[in-house]
Length: 375
Image (cartoon, rainbow, N blue to C red; front, top):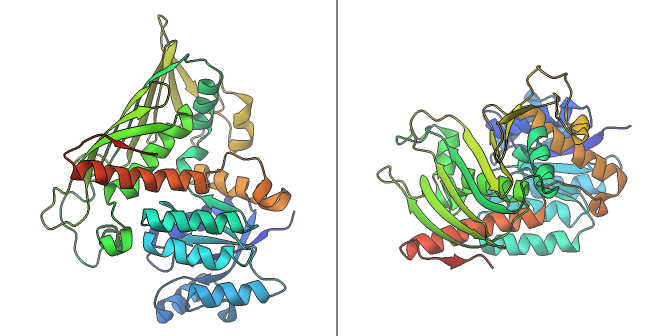
């Protein structure tokens, strides 16, 4: 099967997530990077393109020129990965969507709720596929947890607890720390600091596994580091349709935590526990019985994992492979049915929910953590 011709917006030299997307796109050999607008500055864009071996005439100074020319080329890109700071997601995606080029966009979908609504309209008008890279949904045991909940193994859902804790922003960062600079700048990150950066991942994961929809939340947001203009810690209580209750904690100022995304869900018949830092294990606790350790590709693994794993049980798979699962599923969708494909890929609906969650957190916190609707 021919590789899908891929372009990239952002992700130039010294950019963390761009390299991750490129690795994920090639793990299963489904994509070939052929074009890019890799930086907001022409000099860096050209240098980054050269470093990646892109042809000079396929290395662009800005995403609009790239979208226009690539759409006209006979062998132009079929899909584009958008891996820029949040404020560029919408304007870049719009240029490619309206030209029928599939979009694979980093999260959160946009930096504001207003832009999220505009994005939803652009996706609806376009024939192109829109994928949001909530990559943690690509872990095999997360897919198994989702299926177990859907099959009623846990019974009726009661309690959902999710957290995402880091420590890398515990102190103010120097100006030359590129990753910190844009994430703590509300002009580029949007209103959400920790809530937008990692809180959206936690919220998405909780909803993805349980299938629940939140009706309302109460949020208490902090900016602990003096002078910081975005939140760096948040405690959020959630009320789900059907009566289940949830708690979400996200923090980037929690010393001793590296990438502590963890999920615990409990129903009338049992519970599940999973940690991203040990993603090949899922603890299942049937009520009144000993806990059971389920492992990726091991005994008790569901058949649905077969398409999501590449190595035998006992050989660790992790972050990059989970990311690659989303890219491979996107490739399947592009090559089979495009926008009409039936898939678990996060899309514009997940994106709207994430940005709505951040907006609601800020509305609630501004009102002394009062309950606000997510409708």
